Every structure is written in C-alpha cells, then in structure tokens.
Length: 108
Image 1 (cartoon, rainbow, N blue to C red):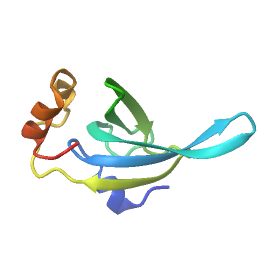
Image 2: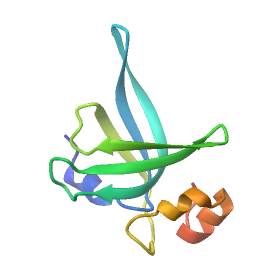
Image 3: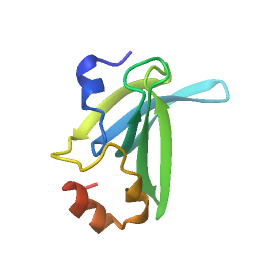
Image 4: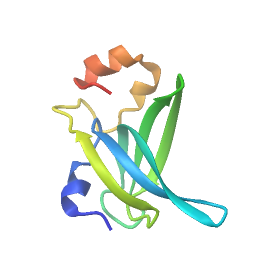
C-alpha cells in the first residue's frame, strides 16, 4: 500500500518512477518505469488509476497503473509540477519533447 504523501503528489504533470514486480517464469524481479503522469482517474477509490507516459527508443509508451495494485512496490516522485493548465494532459501525445518541457515547465 502506498503512503498518503506519495498518493497526493501523483498528479498530472508530475515526473515519477514506478517500481513494479514482474513475474518471468518462476522468477520475480522489480522493473522500473519512469515518465510523465498524464492523468489520474477516480480519486482514491478502489478502481483509481494513473497513466504514465515515457518515450523509449523513440516510441511513446503509456502504462495505466491501478493505485491499489499489489504489483507496485514503490513510487518515487522525481519532480512535481509547478502549475498545469488542465487535469488530463492527453494533448502531450502530439507534442515534441521540447514543446512538452515548455508547456509543463519541467524536463522529462
């Protein structure tokens, strides 16, 4: 279960690192996925989720994580946004990396 302080800081525009447990065959390891939070949905109820977007090898990758997932080991907030213009940042999908930094005011 994630702490309340971390849950409050997961919001649109934040840059985070998500450490999740991945099962490969009979072994289990911890994989890291870091990127920009595009959206946070359904507050803090049971079905609440957040969407993280990163660019890997020139391709945009998005992952949707349930907040109450037992697969999430920990979340590290790298950078919190100063001010974001909207709650869902889906328009970021169409922008370049430079335009994203200018809009949000952070380095992704």
